[in-house]
Length: 303
Image (cartoon, rainbow, N blue to C red; front, side):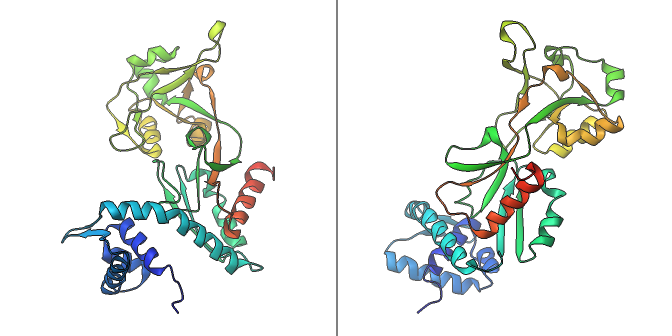
């Protein structure tokens, strides 16, 4: 009897994920020929071709795409059950795979977690795009509350966020200070795009008074720099190249030191804070449970 009856399915998932026998074999620490043999056996058993092979890459057939979509939830359940069985009554261990849009929220806590749980390996993927946790083999993610889907369990990490419109003192000396969000049309502003080919994010504000007080509105800004990385946005503002709208956590030190100056503060609405989230229909494995408890204790005071 094989040690893992789902091995062929796992092999297929990994080949599809990488689009390559070689890269999948490297991750599994097996030879590409052994992986190819495993897939051929699976295709013979199902009597259907799952992958199209070429000299350059490997792609899914229509049957392969459907099969992958159907087995992914079941494989996640099996992995979760096996992980819980292995760790029952034991110290939490294993690899915890997380996706997060901003590493700053965790960077000062990661060393303490590693010290507290040396048997857990953190595999962190920093990316702004939204990903499907199950399809990409991830345990959990950390995103802003407004971007979360409905079918997840969300655990708050800290309080609400707020944004800032910032520029360098030199920029404001050269170009003046906007007093109303609409005046930003006369300024060079760094623009943000979440994903390649996606829409450019509009700058968001809230009315200050009157019957529309608190109502959000967007301002279309213009500028000669478009990026999908917050560090580049902040650096452009530091260098006096443009204005930037970023979350306060990205520029707190710059504002304290005076390298950047914040404007239009009374027009800026609060945002949902950061949340750790995971699929609602799965039991939480011990490695994720201790991570959640640790982060809640450090960021929320145990709430």
